[in-house]
Length: 611
Ligand code: ADP
Ligand code: MG
Ligand code: ZN
Image (cartoon, rainbow, N blue to C red; front, side, top):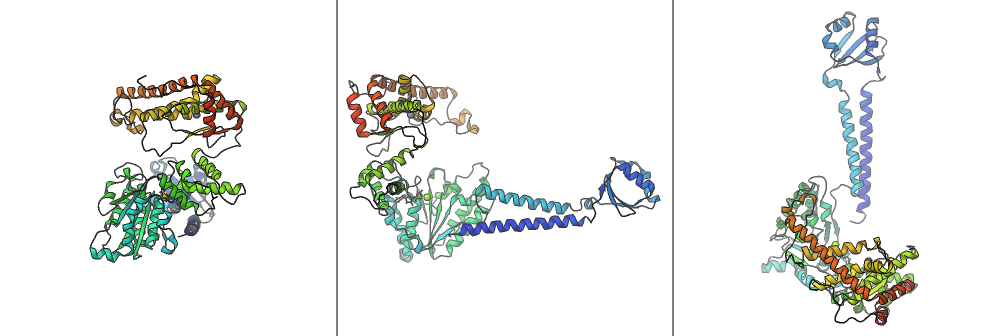
């Protein structure tokens, strides 16, 4: 429920307040019970002197500590030497002879007030624990977690979900069932109760689940898997119970559990919260099994890590229908752009199809964001309608990060950056297996000082070996250009080097693209896992894997060096243009290169092991 967070947090602080008051009261009572004037502590010799003087009226012996009261009413405490009372039998008689009242405290009353202190301690740690919990998790420990949205407020239908037609078709049947459960009961068909939406983030899984409720006109009760994962055993399970109890109050509804993997992780791990998660997961399974055929409640869950889910979750009667919600293809992207551009005013000549073509790999959320950014850019420039240029700028922002014009590079750094980026660009332009260049810029964006951006002509689903080799060579191009033109090495290439090494590692260990053959070499995933049996290969193999990775990266370096040596003129022209105008787009790049590139005899290729 909206606003629930506020009232819950009020409740939390009220609770803390009550605990503090309670602690104060207990402390007060504990102190008061020890009597009014505090006894002073005196030396043992002082005590003996007092006894001899006959001023002592009463002595309470508790282990080595002696509390005594003088005849004038003042009280003191002293500590006897270890074993003094036991080894001096005359001590007792010397007291009684003088008419002193002698008491021996029972061990329990010696710690009088101990229980009070214990209570204060417990309260104190309780409060500290709660506050820490609140501060570290930003959450209030409570059982109220699920949010119910009434059908009138769901306000999302299938029309709002674009580009995932297969997924929509798969869930349409469920919506029909929710609309008319009786019809399905008559036929006797068994409708799947658990639907698992699987796909990368931002592809519209949450949106699709909500639209199901919107289409069927039933309440939408949602919770996130991470809500169920708590430090305290049993809390998660109680929340699951509460969620299903809420749901059963409705005649029919959709329960949506986001991030199912947070609770549904394969059991048998050894993490700290393992016990708790297992209890929570078991509760979820129990609730799902407990559905009556007559109830029309559908559970929809979303995850992007289906591989780590506990197999028990996927068994028949549970999440037995899996619907893949993938990143949209070019047609899907156009439809999503269309849906979201309804909310903004587009200029007449805006071509959404070409935007869709230039945004491979964008998710639905990325595209929604692109339209929103474009509208913001138009508004910032004082226009009322969104133009093609705004959409282009928004896309570049999405692809390459936000421009940071405030970063002040020194002149020397600008030159370094220009040659570095020109190095990437020239290598990319000259390798036919590489994606076409989209833009080169030395305006700092995100964390990079300069960016060379390539864009595939069509969506890529697989990558060929020459493509990856070309990618490594392009990454090396920046460093090579700096070395050849400026006789320097800078830290600017560190990310390039990291990415190139990672590509090479993938080629050797996962893609079978090295002389080691089509084998998967799993890297030890943690320190626990570092013995060679667990990592799946011998030390000898590990050495060869390292060697092959090195060979692939060095080959890319060599390819880049050969191209740049030959194309010095083109690289210099591009770098100089960059220093002047900061950004060069694809068309201008072609012009510059057309006038300066030395023609190659035979097609240029990344250096392969055949060479
Ligand atoms: P997920 O749950 O898969 O991470 P969401 O459903 O939360 O993704 O998507 C976030 C936002 O992105 C949605 O609110 C919507 O605005 C937009 N979006 C994502 N996918 C689509 C789609 N297929 N059609 C229309 N909008 C989409
Ligand atoms: Mg989501
Ligand atoms: Zn670089």
